[in-house]
Amino acid sequence: MAAAAAPDHLFNLRNNFYLGAYQAAINNSDLTNLPPDDAVERDCLVYRSYIALGSYQLVISEIDESAATPLQAVKLLALYLSSPDNKESTISSLKEWLSDPAIGSNATLRLIAGIIFMHEEDYNEALKHTNAGGTMELHALNVQIFLKMHRSDYAERQLRAMQQIDEDHTLTQLANAWLNLAVGGSKIQEAYLIFQDFSEKYPMTGLILNGKAVCCMHMGNFDEAEGLMLKIQKLLPTWLYAVFTKENQLHVTSNLCHWLVFLLWDATGSRLCVIYREVGNQLKLTHPDHMLVKRASSGDESFERALQSVA
Image (cartoon, rainbow, N blue to C red; front, side, top):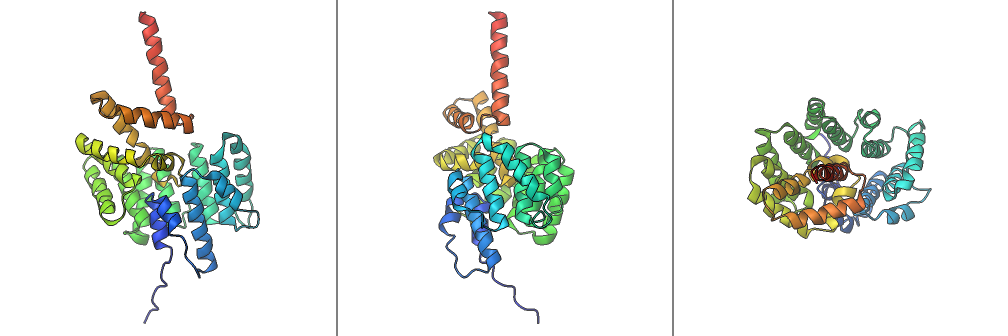
């Protein structure tokens, strides 16, 4: 008779983190008598939750040089996100660590490398470190990278690998929803049902609400999308920082798509203009180099030029 599987003491903590319930992950992380590897993973998840909430300096100050490699990698991420001035030195240190045979294959270090290089929009470099997989997070990150490269075919291969490992895993379901959103058509309804299932099983988070709202937009259900976005507004500012500073870029595609709601509603009515301005201004302040900010600025400049040409 096969031995029973050991209990997964970190299941709830991981789930909270994956679904964007960062404060809940932090509040419920007091897990004692964990094996050493589980204790390190717990600490990584907690510190990554703090990063998601914008508490970079707390992470930087609490993780010292004696910490395990996964925690050092998380600290690198906090340094990278904390200031544009840190990017060059952080990436240099990251490349040095990745080239070290003793630690270069560490799964958490490779995950952080993928996240940072994806931030840099250097997708080929990101895939050099993530494509081999090894953990569900690495597979899910690969899905995100391929979708950002507009290669849904490769993203689907990664999803299939995840389904073979654990079809019911939270990250597998999220990756399935992201791919369905990218493919579009009849797949949008399937994505909506995934987010709906999450909303019935777990406490509501911005990630879940946003996923449902994006699906509603695709399906033309603008009233429901508006209601969902207004619920998201009530989660600000905590959720706002989580969306745009969260190092786990597994959720970037669906989270950033909520801007489509603001943009489209601004074009068809004025009910969400206040939210649009609020979130838009926050994004400009916190991430002035973000793609969406650059696009909006470019549009503003083009509009001004057009006005001047007819003045």
